[in-house]
Image 1 (cartoon, one colour):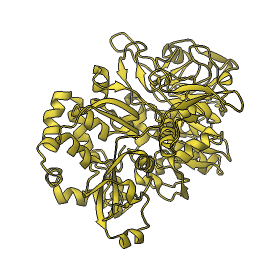
Image 2 (image 1 turned 60 degrees about the vertical axis):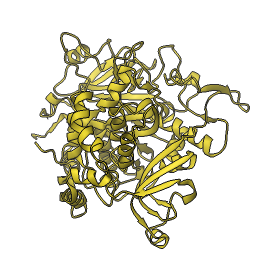
Image 3 (image 1 turned 180 degrees about the horizontal axis):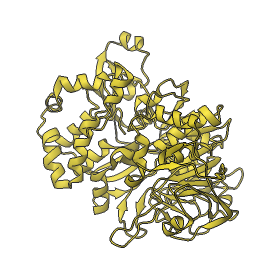
Image 4 (image 1 turned 180 degrees about the vertical axis):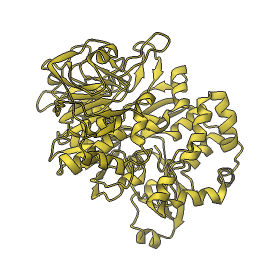
Length: 284
Length: 281
């Protein structure tokens, strides 16, 4: 039927589909893909979601548009009520935050994330820092990881991988750290990450807590994933291709984000990408 | 980040050649980056310093950390909240249900693991945090020093309660009756040590309902910061900090009344609001 969308819109839809209904969900700051995904989820997939906005802590806001910085008052428009910062983190600490979305400049095979620094022994690059990621990664009930920069073009013959074997610094805890300590051993309430949505595909974590490729996009291949990942991810028996967002979802995204702020998260070459519905697409 | 940062206070701190600061906060941007660009910071306990997806990394902060001039002691939001709560409640420490398993313990030797006397399970405890000084920009104060913050206060209330000295600038000082009419104070006067009226005192961050975030000025700031620390001194600090003997002079240099009118146009309509964030290209 000639439906097509951009990569950003596809990622938003995939992120939105990871949310469960009747749960409290929070998006952090600097993550317009997730912010928009939660509005899509609330309006299309999970109407009883309690949406808590990052930085403003407004509950169920209905912003007229998305601004380039998260704590702008525009994102707080029409909020029903507000939480304080302490209250939100208290809810998470006691296991009442249903799902959190985390990302990193490095995401490793066990779902650990690094937003603190590159370089293990000596600092190579200071990253902005994780906000509350460290805390929320431990006890949010469920976690969706995402990155729009899985594709890592070589610079001077060297790749700086986004999806790495082991994070240089663990800002957010995944399923286990480099010492082999698991979240069960630490007694955490949270289940850890269940999925990772990237610009190349959708992953889940197997029984060991290891990253596993679950689905691709109409324009990506297993080879793309292998080439752009520092280690070999495990593969689901059948790797599907996701279906494109519905016209309803696309219309919500386009109306909510006329400034296309979410595209700032994408690699420059991915911003103008248009995807078409493949044959035999499966919902992932 | 882009809202209600005490920028006039920070410019004044820099002009007064204060340095060797340990800065602590949750999610920040241009405020901390400006202090770093002026070499005023020797340690950072922020949980985030950056310009989100719009302008990316905070260049002065990053340079300071990478050169070793700034000691990196990154914290996380809830650890900060719990440390402030310990101080506010007069407790020797506060337990926290996270952090173990991550690398934060490595740069925080003061975080300890103890056993719960009830369940016997391991739990992390963090020490109280009592900052020497908290700096806050609010919309209103009365002459007594009661502060009214409109919109999300984020960590400002906890900082005001925990700090030894609280310095506040406000858009407007009003009578107590007027403050009550506006909705009342959320930081009582006895926490507040000093107040000063500084209209547009959060610029280039927003202070709604008075003015929106000045993306245009932030872009100019970022282009100077990206060129390196010497260029930043020449192209930004000199013009907008060192040579501004007063806050009035700063307001004049950023475009005076025209800029104020442009940034307050957000209330006219959604389109006018959006117009402020359109990219100049």
